[in-house]
Length: 160
Image 1 (cartoon, rainbow, N blue to C red):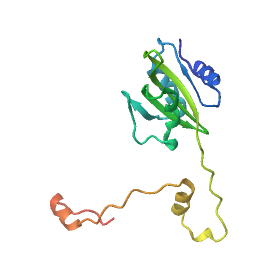
Image 2 (cartoon, one colour):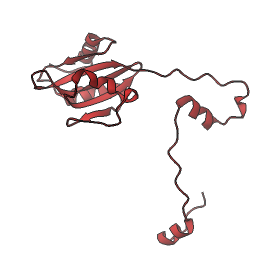
Image 3 (cartoon, one colour):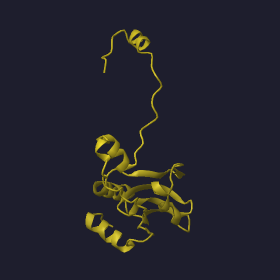
Image 4 (tube, rainbow, N blue to C red):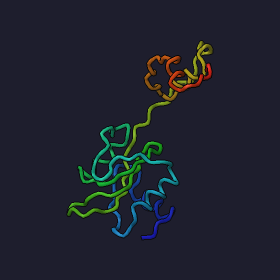
């Protein structure tokens, strides 16, 4: 099977918008399919590598793509695209043979937050962005002894 963007379009159309998967012909290069999808959807999330599933995989991180394979996935990369997860890689079929796969699953997309309300004018833009994206920053680093750090470096650090 020759892989082109048109071929990928046809495969995705066969799967449709619902949860579904396809075992692809054995002569198909799974990495070539991953590269085509990578060019279309951006960098993927690795869900399964060498048969080991990412322990952080959950519904918000593409776990729905794993369901059809019942622990038989060998490699699986995933992309979030609108209300779908799209995944490709390799999985063992019912006979135990490792084959390339393409899989789609529904994705819950959070409701966008309400626009700025009256009285929010005093909220700074970072706070608004945090509310819109739902992002929470990493834990704050504990206080550092800057004098000791500068002594160890043998040079003063800028004040900012």
